[in-house]
Length: 600
Image 1 (cartoon, rainbow, N blue to C red):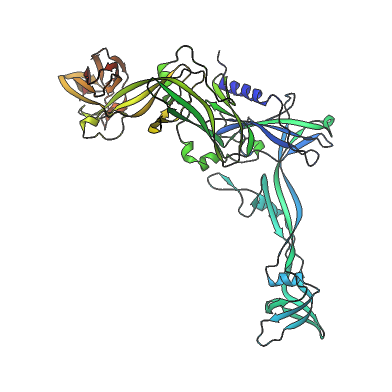
Image 2 (cartoon, rainbow, N blue to C red):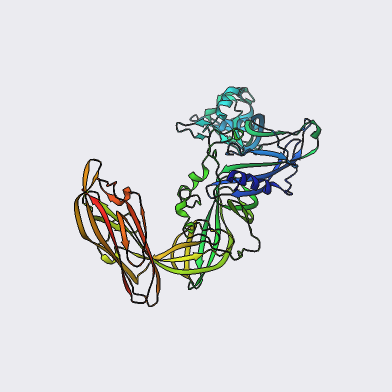
């Protein structure tokens, strides 16, 4: 019985967390942990598993802590354990601290210059007209002490602000730190409008605003600024027990978080006759945090029910959705293996056997049941950076296939054809040659031991680009179709004629319908100089009763997409027919079907 994906991922996490880790830097104080990222497991949907090792020395009560608390850890995925695998309890909280900071800076105002030169002999040039310079010794600037810092006001500035849409943003009145917030307030004396100067005739008090210049032999132009600093940081604590007091401690932490994604991209090249050289690389986007660790790139998307819910231990109100903000277009690309529409290999099935995958020497691939993991080399990536990781290169069998897919849409009232195109979208060209395009596609056989994940594929012949399309998920031993371009030397047309009409043939929902029998003809011509393997499909509303040339018919339920405008005809079936044939050089082939539809 297949293990569920959640069990599979937890097994993967345990495997990744096992083994010796890299020791972090020495702790600066008892109880403080130094964290080092051991491994990052990256998925294609913008989430990643971080495995970290924390080392330090427990304090006198057997506790250790770190201020590196992840912002977006997913509910239920935040775990800590000892080296022997025993789960540890965690405590997350905000810690506030007050400090005084002094810095040497330039004097930027007259009053600051006067304060910095108290007690020195100076000459003051005054702004009053015809006033003589004042020579003396600076006494003091008449000030009052700075205002006291109200704790409640500081706490308010440190509190995050939540807007109407529910997303948390930093308070604009604060400066954000690495793991929390910081508020500073300079100790600026109140007053400063009057200055005292001692002269030979006594003391003179004059307004600071009247001082135009200050000069003196020992004049200084710098001052010492004093700031009160209040910080508010996250803290994650672990209680190791009284027996661990003062001893070296090692803790492993793992959590699942948003912000890192990988995008697979392929290069398909070589001679492109009977085989193709195909290479895969992973493009990694990091909007979560700096890391320097081995990276695993996972094929497959696990089921995490609560990945949009942040763990309470993260001390955040909501996910930041960092990748969605940083790269919205990339986050909406359909590169997920979970979509059956992007799993073309399943339509062909898997063959027997498979050649060994030709990985780069420093890479290896491991399969974990529903998830396939590429173990890449160590990658140092800062937050906001991108990188590519070469994964493998191999030669696989190639077959050229020319496909013509006709999709018919009828008027809901008359039953006449209103549109015929390949994908059911867009207008029809007035040129009959282009009414039904014939596509040149590569049928690639995955004769390797690894599945091909969905990704963009660049097609090259030598240095000539032939095109780019989506290579869809293909299991080992399966086959995938990769569209190359519209074939210029093959063309096709579609036409139909009415054979018979029988009035009052069907009663449906209190309405009477006529049965119309038609014959459709698809003509495809090979103007190439060599034989061409060709696949033709026809999809329409109605019941196909017979097809020439051993066409395979599948009749199914009514589809709304078969009928344009109003007046859907629910009593009509939907039918598909397909042909596989080899066209000789210069050969033209006409394929026919007979079908019936019901119209008012």
